[in-house]
Image (cartoon, rainbow, N blue to C red; front, side, top):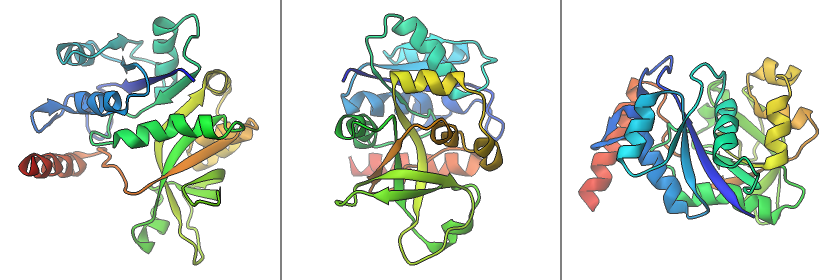
Length: 248
């Protein structure tokens, strides 16, 4: 395999405008994500930016960024546009879509997406999930859940469904986190297809992959990454930066 990691980012976030450039411990959030992706060591990394300010911040930090149309409707559209500029010949057969709002994502989590595609020949798209921390998370519609057929080692599973609904039972409930690894053909097919009925029902774009007849595998992470969606998340991320810098 020959992976590339692309990080879509835009300034016009509804709940936290300008969040890619939000300062976290002296670094813009997008630069922290870039550094973690580079540390995974699985291939080149670039930011698919919707705004020139993001490109400038990434470039100042020594990273690579591609300016894409700010009106593109989704992160996957943004990475497809960036990919067309960065790799028009199709040399990279695996594309990892890493969200730009998870500033402390473990490099191993980024690598896990690419590794699953190597380990599971039938896998078209890979992602990650974590075990629920408390039962209350099952009823939170903001936390997507994964219904998965687990592998024997318990470290990955084939996704049967994704839902925002409550799941019941004694078995652990798996919570989904939006890092994706695509085989190049799967990304092309996904991006070309319109939103599917289940995708629109659940407001989860990964269901389009399943409705297209493709296979998703999810790797198990030991802890959930901090995702920054609102001002309170940002303060939590800043507190985490202070704590890890204090241990350094």
